[in-house]
Amino acid sequence: MAHLKRTTVIVASAMVALTACAPAGYDGANSSAAEPVAVAAAEPTAAAEPEASATADAPTDDQAPPADVRLTDQLVGKKLPRMGQVVTDQDGWVLYRFDKDSADPPSSNCVDKCAQVWPPALTDGNPQVQGVSDDKVGTVTRQDGTRQITIGGWPVYRYIGDKKPGQWKGQGVGGTWFVVDPNGKKNLTCLPTGTPKAVAPPASGDSGGSDGGSSGYSY
Image (tube, rainbow, N blue to C red; front, side, top):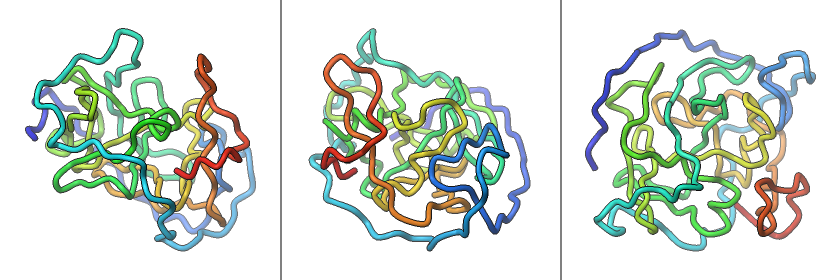
């Protein structure tokens, strides 16, 4: 996998050690939305096995994403209240990484229903970066031939359970999903007290998921 080449704007930001955070689903854009709770353990137990994998050994000919597929045109490293360092896309949606993926070599194990709930951050090969080191950004070819952005080798995703930019309702879901920081590491600053379940995959033709997360979907 070759790293992408582009002009990079580096934003240095001191990491602040936080000792309390909001419950899962706290709206980072509004720091008064909820009372803080104690930080949970740093490494939750992994959840169910993934259904299938998309690895660097997938089809060698990259395909352009379909016209109706959302591309991630920009990566922005920033600090959100209470959560600390995160990476968002061009619209401010927080990005995540999955413990059942691999960074060396980069590979994605989130496909099918998983990818409906956690849409991969797809690229045409030229995302702009701000606050993220250029040498941390790359791509991995998925099973369908599309290219997914990696940070520090880890494939990154959005979460349909986040209802507006700046939310991080995906933090700690299944004990395997975590907000990604600008180095590709898990941001463990703000963790839920339990192990949240993922929202259900969207119904056919629906662009969003249910907040219930009780469909048996385990990612």
